[in-house]
Amino acid sequence: MLTFHSAATQQRRARTELDGGVLVTPYECPERVDLVLERVRRTALGEVREPDDFGLEPVLAIHDRDYVDFLAGCWDEWQSLGRQGEAIAWIWPTRTMPGDVIPEHLDGRLGHYALSADTSICEGTIESAQASKDIALSAVRHSLTTGEPAFGLCRPPGHHAATDQFGGYCFFNNAAIAAQYALDHGLGRVAVLDIDFHHGNGTQQIFYERDDVLFLSLHGDPRQCFPYFLGHAEETGRGKGEGFNANYPLPPGTDFATWASALDDALARIRAAGCELLVVSLGVDAFENDPISEFKLTSDDFSEVGRRLAGLGLPTTFLLEGGYAVEEIGINVVNVLSGFEAGT
Ligand code: OKP
Ligand code: ZN
Image 1 (spheres, protein in one colour):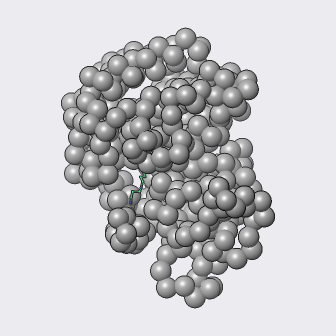
Image 2 (tube, helix red, strand yellow):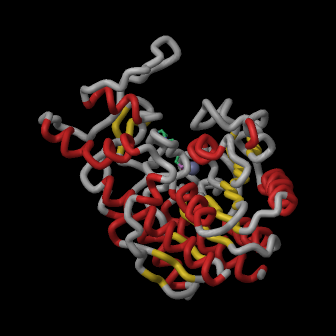
């Protein structure tokens, strides 16, 4: 299987993440890419290629122009204000303040465009986000033109990013951008299957009223887990999108047997919907030793996940999302990919 990788994904090296009331070194670190790449090479998964530059057009098919402009200018603006640390949102339009007017001050705009305070904007952020979407686009183009699977070693991840909001370590929604690219190049319906531990709130929001993207997500129940405010089983889509959104919230402590029966249900839904391409939001933070997640999948279980995905028989593009137990992230990611190849 081809891997798409770019060193530019590592330009973002944030120093601060608000975690338990203190600023810690972010879990979403550039070393994640090194570990996955090392494992791809060690297992001889296949050729590693640089992505092409697709420009901003496929990004603007998903994200609002003002949001993209905000991300592109934020770090320079922050520095021109003479701020010491990294750009972190700290006030939001909440239920008691509609926030219909986008503020002019950067602190206000940060609150408008952020969905959480865990994700700072720092030097290199927009560059890494652009490399990440180019990786996703290169991978999906390869799957479309050859029918072969491809792996996009994306960083930063994307599935929490909504049409005009960043957060949960995500800026551009790589999976949504890739799915839209496939539709814009002739496909009628695409499935986005999100197996990251966290609900893919951004992908859900982007496609919620559409029937050309079937979005399915297995994740920690939002009653207990980030992102807390989306991802319930009752969210099934709206308007013509009704029936094209499927959430499988599972309790903390869920093991592979329970998780895999939700997966099998999701795979049956994908089969029934007549999808022509599968985009996998491949987070491996459902791993038993992940430092910020609470499922109990083992490294061997990830191989079985790959085998079951292969059973669909669809052209498949894998895009990296989360996974933070840094020693095992490479093993778990490549186990999914190798399991997929063994299953085809
Ligand atoms: C991103 B992805 C407290 C944790 C805040 C929330 C998790 C973001 C996960 N510092 N971060 O879905 O793996
Ligand atoms: Zn996650």
